[in-house]
Length: 271
Image (cartoon, rainbow, N blue to C red; front, side, top):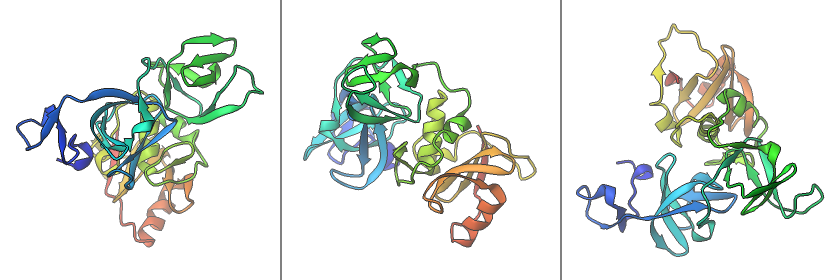
């Protein structure tokens, strides 16, 4: 089993793996991310695999050196996060629909901000003050929120709202994002399931034949890279060429990636 999807810290495993491996087993403890962003790491204080956002539900399986080994409920991704980034709280009721927004100390525009939060973060509304939503973490403009279940109709438009976002390996936010993070954020905002990395995402949908014309929302895959089709001539992707989320001509991208050692297109998928 892929370590990214295997709820086993190397010492403690989730009970779902009983009979498959030798380990100490646990049913785990349910928690949620209480920080704006939590890096999901390969080991305590290790490299970042992906990021979890405020309000994300996780199962804590093990704890070590100030970190917790968790499995994310949404996509099953496993890794280590700082224990201080996890806690308990009310079930989220709304998600952030704006590319980014702030948590404020008071429900006024002049109030100091507590933190920036990104598209896809989840919060629980405990009340409202005019144009402001009160949450356990601070006040948020109501215009930047939408009830969970009211999803964006077009994932490509979600990706386009993140144009110019700087490239960040393993990133999932407006403050930094990579190619598979952009696809995952866009599909999650549209209410669709999506794994975290491009080698997992390549299995989604239906493979297109070489003669089928690309359409909006299709995915194009290279080894270690994915892009989303805007129209038959243009794609959008978080890429190392511009170090940002950017549009690029499909033909130009295919040529550039091949010329810079990225190889040829591996697949084209329709969701």
